[in-house]
Length: 104
Image (cartoon, rainbow, N blue to C red; front, side, top):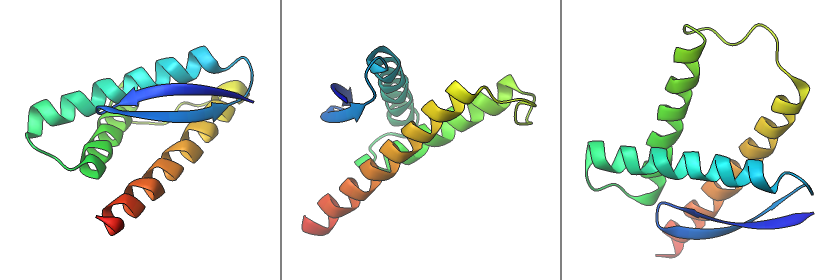
């Protein structure tokens, strides 16, 4: 396992990934950060959790637009594996954000 530092929405996260997937994780993190910035620019002041929420919606919308509103007919197993890893990471991040909010 490798560890990658990602900066998203102004915060740095240490994220573990499989060896060899560091570049893909960096690119995914950059995309999430870009969408967080878009959400913040479009909606003004947002809590971190809402910033991630709207970033996720923007990413989902972008994916649907590429497929005319329908999911792709066939899913590459490598892409599926990476998406599952990203989903796990996002769930972990959401849990962490909720814990931070509860402690604040």
